[in-house]
Image (tube, rainbow, N blue to C red):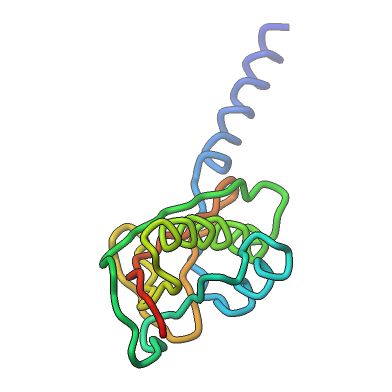
Length: 146
């Protein structure tokens, strides 16, 4: 009987390293698609426009620089893309609230800022997904457009 318990315990310990090794997959995904989904669902009200780095319209008057947000979401039983979309929507909701509170109507020069490493792209954002969590970190400027 004790032999069976020891064998079972040994098998369980062999399984632990596979479970404990964390996955951290980097994805570069379309930004505008998520903004459109969040606006269509009512999570974003459309009063604030979002512009990735390199897409800022001329005449934007920056009110506040280097606003940051970092959002994570449960990725369990979700696709990486689905979890990343959810995390980005949460980050955008936070940026929209910050913009409205500052009297801005745009968030410009948005860059991904995961672990304080900037990734600039005019069409995509960076997301990191694992088996349990997915996260998005952004840095941007709040601005007023005419």
